[in-house]
Image (cartoon, rainbow, N blue to C red; front, side, top):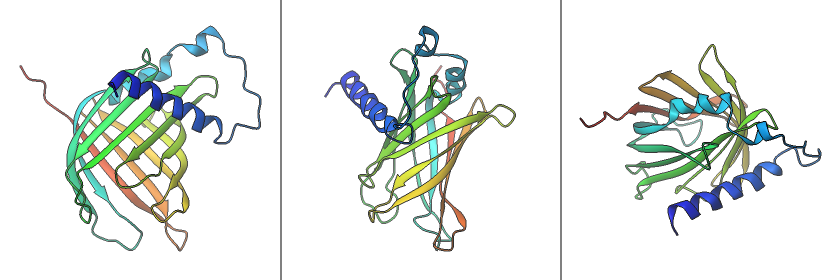
Length: 198
């Protein structure tokens, strides 16, 4: 499948999933021409555009004290006329999994809903992470909440933070709750911008 076709199909799945993730009971507001176009909120996502090296720390459950680690590369680029940021990641295998770590995601801003929307999936399972969020300009951070399908077939609520440290670094953290109800970090990723070849 060509990359353009793949992206369009992925975006369509995202739209369908988000349509049924909590707003299905409310009639959709009529979109204006302005709400159909990328706006200032989309410019916030420009901080995450580009080619990055990533360092991944992964805690499979709350009992794990030493996280599994992986290093890889990310390519994040605009699709669909600058409305969504498409993210592709490839990295070394995480301990306990012989396959190289691969993930794809897409993030945008739903102007009609006044919220950031995101979905992500990887080759460690068949679940899809879906979330919505808001931006805190003082902390340069997108705070999102959503649900994730765990490998054992259960659904779990999560919260996550996209933090733009500066033009050359950003971080992503995802938090789950353990059996005792206490929150723990399940995933931490540091992204460092790859140097531009002269």
